[in-house]
Image (cartoon, rainbow, N blue to C red):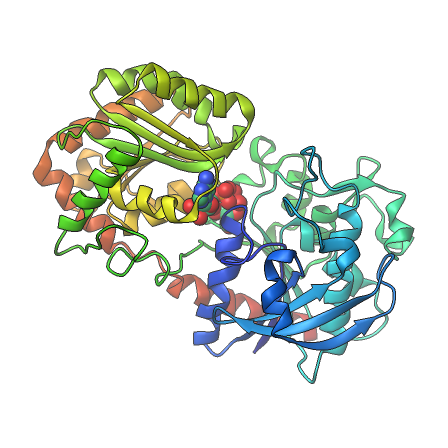
Length: 482
Ligand code: ADP
Ligand code: GLC
């Protein structure tokens, strides 16, 4: 089977969050199952050296205001199709935001162009390669099925994967004509959203199948609490909605071979984890103390991630004798809150504001537990990295967090299956109780090290989920042709 992925990020080239990790890893697992995946991405500056080593396969004289070409390249085990359109993508800074922190003024053109050219490749093929199916990811790829739908002739089916419904790509309806989309698609069952045009709604309305990144989030999306205004259309398509859990790249995230760590370790020998732990203490200015657990946070600092709750629960964490290290960036009040906490609780709390991939590995390698108090979490990957690194996830019971962590309640401990701590409701009080419970478990060192080893054994790769994607692709192709 041949599948075309369309997305706006891909690790290790360009990443703002978990979407990139998924796009960088899932195609490799699918190719192990004989699914030939090409990943179509914007030709950002970060991909320039990859593009320079590739071959031009398609030229477009004028793509929304400038010339463009599609370059085929192979890098990091992936077959890439890069949309080189300098007037849209050759910009320094964030891939989504301008220097003042606003969305790029022409994001509709940038990602509309990506979708239009992806649809053209899906229909006509490129360099003798024609996909059997398209998998479009998030709003940036949401118009692919709209372009396919308005094509007069056979097209391959399209699966939309929703990684986060909070981002919907909503623009003035006036862009419809500019993007070359027909008026007939702009209806309340289609891409119209309160008088505007929504890329994500287009994807939901016009795709053959919709997936999201965990079974619990698939159910949550149908409720007003989590659907963010799109619950109605998702309910309408409920028979075509499937939750498939994300996996992680087991080569990139492997404590036995991770050379970004000062020492590697395994389930059989955890000595290296102690060395990583000392490195964390040093980097974050904490006192050396094997008895006091280190909790970490590696996250975008946003409302979604519930880290304001952690600021509220912090006095309880420190009173309990535990420590906290934070790596993240995002909203100003959270950055300031954690910087302030590091001053107030110097020696117990350390904060590094920024984005640092190698340090994110050290956080997983050297911490005892990872805190993820998200208000909603479609899947979440850092708890999976935590499991793999024996860093016990302490998570809000929502979305993919609920699906991947087995709470250390009495029954789970007796059955030898606990891998972490879950809490609900998602409040500061219940987070503080979860932290307290984790500290108690940490003091029971025999139980704790059993839990660490169990966590490290928990399957977090793509194996099962890649099969699920493939089955779903097969069914979509059969239904589309029928
Ligand atoms: P989301 O995509 O909602 O941000 P995920 O848990 O799915 O959440 O993925 C987040 C990814 O981004 C993980 O790979 C995590 O390690 C990484 N990450 C988040 N913040 C940082 C940071 N400040 N530095 C390095 N990596 C980070
Ligand atoms: C989104 C979600 C996150 C998920 C990631 C990859 O960014 O917020 O929960 O893990 O996509 O699917």
